[in-house]
Length: 198
Image (cartoon, rainbow, N blue to C red; front, top):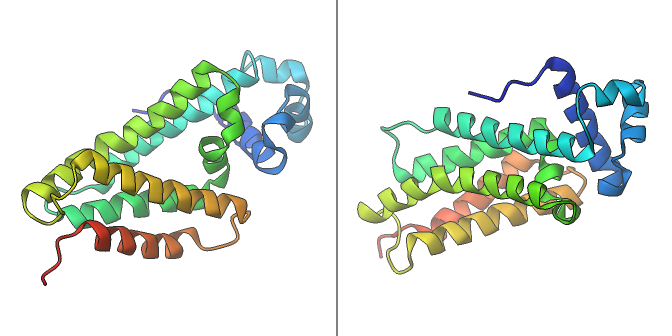
């Protein structure tokens, strides 16, 4: 169940994401946000107490949204490889339609802002691991995935590959097809971790 936020709060979060995308963390001010939305600054403060509160709400919404989406995307009767593919197809599909959320997660400048924001970013990573780890363990137990490295090491490789893919999309200003190139990345990851017949 997603945290309850009003439609207006969601509009503010999305506008903040657009400013993050175009101007970075330094450009995200209440003044700029009010201008972007054609609001008064006091109108923004009626919904959020600060810039940090807006960013935290954005990250919390993202963590909960991904958790819910991942839970619905994975089916019991899928193979471990199919589950892994579905998990990341779901992520790429979500970020393709909401690129400003990708900026929130993959903007290093945000990590300088506060410990609260760092914890919120870690929460997003925890959500991914929560869904990824059982898939990797299942794949190792049934012989689909290699046992030459640990499940934690496989997760590290997968999450690193996904993060690099998302970062490249971000610095390319979202110009390439995230989903199509994401399929190539998933194929490569599966080639690395699957046990293949010799």
